[in-house]
Image 1 (cartoon, helix red, strand yellow):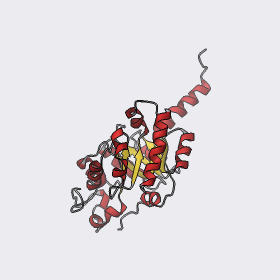
Image 2 (spheres, rainbow, N blue to C red):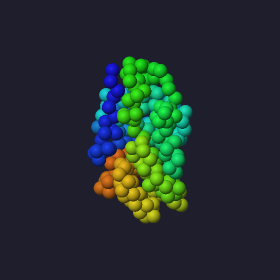
Image 3 (cartoon, one colour):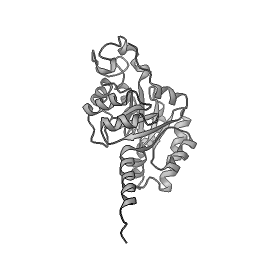
Length: 257
């Protein structure tokens, strides 16, 4: 067997727009449905969702055959956690709250086997098709994609150093935490936040790295794409379910007043 090609990594490296969706509902059934909806990538969130490794294992299985490349957002920049998600077959990781060059270097090192990094070795994980991909340990790095999330003042201050680390494949702007860090918690549309997001997109691009972001606001998503965001998530499964169900109920129930 051969190592699966990371089509998402190839796409963002070549500057091809990748439109994504966030998966927060932590269900393999949901993932199977939305993975085939036509999106290019899909975040399986374990940072802000009630999602754990065995559940993500099933979600990775459910995503096979769909159009959306699964990206696992790990809960933290932690060597053991990253190792475990790589072993179950995640090829692309989104690592939150990176604030320094050292943290960026650590994140990359956690995805590489020695001598290049610190990833622990397993003889027959799902990632190697249970040892059916004979050269997995020596070739997997080519298909791994490391996306680092910048979402704090420290991260902004060190953005160029973070983006410049070898092995970093893209930088993702976290608008929620970034707005909180700037004193506008819960209001990522505040003009100050928007100005900094726009500047950050330009800075990431100037470093020669793909920029990414999440917003459920269609106008904003299109604006970020125009500014050069290559991987843009435009909503979430939770948002679709909550808002669409509310709209359906409202069409049949009399409104108060």
